[in-house]
Image 1 (cartoon, rainbow over the protein chains, first blue to last red):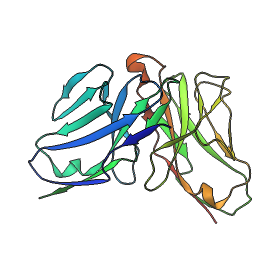
Image 2 (image 1 turned 135 degrees about the vertical axis):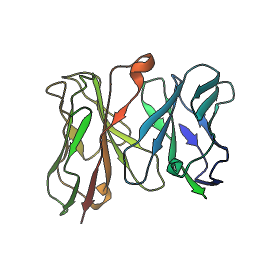
Image 3 (image 1 turned 60 degrees about the horizontal axis):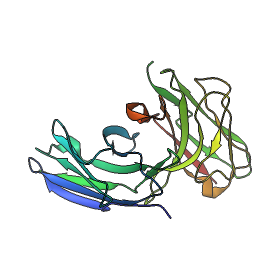
Length: 109
Length: 115
């Protein structure tokens, strides 16, 4: 079966750095996405990785290792508005997105 | 209005009733999707459409039907609602199936409760 694993919940301090991990086992791989979802709102796109390595976009970076079936999202200089759920999703061989259950990130002052 | 709209925002429905959730996008995207999101579970694909006139089944299609008569609209119908269909439903769209066109954009969601 297809499986995306990420921690259920993480806590971090305002101004700090946090790394959210995602491991996957899917039938085929056509890219990995990270989305942010604030409570009661729709998911919004953060990043897309299809090749190994680190993609940096402002305070957010995403890393991919296809051989290890592993990705992480790195958030720097945390702000209170970063409190949200972070969803990892993999595009499988049928070009369908397989979603993890999400990691709820709690930022404390 | 740019993006994706969904209606209604929320609905309470008696079991056995028929219900259509509406989704409209104005980005001229080719592909559209319906997901349900339940607590503790990832988004699950119900149905999708790669282009107007075509539809396909996702991971959890039973009890749901869709149509794609034109590019902009992708309604989801529950023929006879059951309590297990209580969920938050998201409609999404993407420009295509390759490269940056794969990014899916989501509507605000419909919160459906079936009693």
